[in-house]
Structures are given as structure tokens and as C-alpha cells.
Image 1: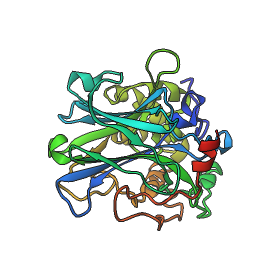
Image 2: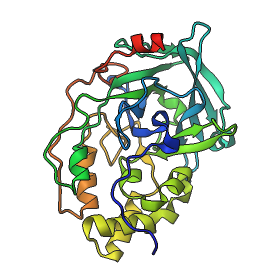
Image 3: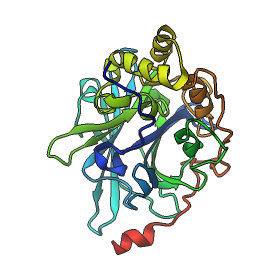
Length: 332
């Protein structure tokens, strides 16, 4: 096999941090069992490769940010929530939320029924929230809820318990969705970014389960990010090869474990409490301890980092960002 394991790849898709998906969350709305919360985190404020801060401009106006939802178990989207961004007459960044379904949801593009238009994007500390038709919507900078000792992972899984994301920010898209619009049953959810800079829509990033595209796709990362979950069986050998290297697993066991990680979909039943990996994912779920144990074949079980304490109890649930970016954007 020509593929060789070269360690985690933290590079940005298409070289643009604003297209880089970080985490996906799905959980019931606290106190209201007829609604769910979907969270897409994208564009980390600080990169690993290249190292250092990314742009303060939160989202690309030439991209689509998309939640894909499979309602019948065939790993093809039946519903898509599409978010696009543009500049208002005053030069502020605003968002449009669309909902597509059936064949339209499975295709690439910006089509769909408009639910919210002209929603203000938050670049400061205040969470600017827009509501319509039973939905609530937020887009902007927030405190990153993800917690992990990234430097320990880069140092051959030698963890010290230092949380790389303790004071990190990320761009969040949060939607409060009526469960009736999700089908009131178990669904599969994933996210993707679609880049239109070249004059046509091209999928830039996609995923649902944490860190798989970073650690397990090897030299086929580009192919993986451009694919759909329905194609994921073809990546089982790639994942297995990486697992052989990261954990010393025997080939047969590596293939078995790889098969449990694909398709790259987050399964979620809004009628049940959220807890990763069994049902959706809460903002406080420790997803990396289980992932570390999987990829090291049980040799390492924890990075010794715990959940953040700045989460909110109400929409949009993610903590206040650590840096104010309003002034920088106004001056740009």
C-alpha cells in the first residue's frame, strides 16, 4: 500500500480557515422537548498548521455552510439547512438561512426555502439572535467549547493535560429547530462547507465525528473531504491502515474498528437525552478520551483535560468570546 501514516493533519481546506469545520453538536433544547439545537463550529481563531491566529473575518461570503440530515437511514441527505453570508448596504456581515428537502437537499448549491434573511452576525461580545417561523438563529464568534491537549497529540500522544482551547475562540452557527421539521425520530447529521470562489460550488470540508479527518485519513484526506457519507465504505482500508500505526492493531481488528467509525455521521434521536457517541453530542461531552483510546488501541485512555466552565444555560449556549472583534472589523 502506498499510503503511509504521517501523523495528524491540521491544515485548512482550500487553505482557508473560514472553511475549516471543527465540531458538530446536536442536543435537545433544555426545558423544551419539542425543539433541538444544532451547532456547527467552523474557523478556529488559532491554527496549528499554519501556526498562529487566523483572520478576524468570521465567514466567507463565497461559501455555503450546511447541516445535512438523513431521515431514512440511506446516508443521503433528505433535509439540508444552508447558511450563506453577504454584506448589508452598511457593510455589515449578514446571514441567510435556507431549508432544502428531498432531492434538492442531496444536491450541491444554495437553493432552498428561506427561513431567515438578513440576520446580524456577531463579531463582539453580545450574541445577536434572530428568530422566525419557530426557529432561532445565531452566527458569529464564540468561546470554543472543544477541549483537548493538541500539543500532546502532536508529541506522540504524550499528554500533559494542557488544554490548547482553554481561551480559544471559534465561529459558531447555532440553529434552534422544531423537532417536527426533523421528523421526530432518529436521524443522521453531518456538516459541510461548500466553496464557490472558483465560479462553481465545490465541497471543501465535511464530517460529523470529532477528529477523524485529522487523524485517520492520511494521504487521502483531500478525497475524504470531497466525498459523501454514502461513499465512506471505501475509506475503511485507509482508516484501518492509520489505526495499525497509531495503536499497533492487527489488520483484522483495525478493519473492524474502522468500520465502526464510518459512515462519518452523528446519529441523533431528539426524543432521547444527548450523550456522545450514543446519541448526538452535548457541548460538554468529553469526545476525545474515547477517540484517543480507540486510535491507540487502549494504550492511552485520556488527555487529562476536562470541559470548559463558560457555557451558557440559554441560546446560543456557547460562551462569550475571549476577544472583541467588532472594532477590527469596522476598521477593515
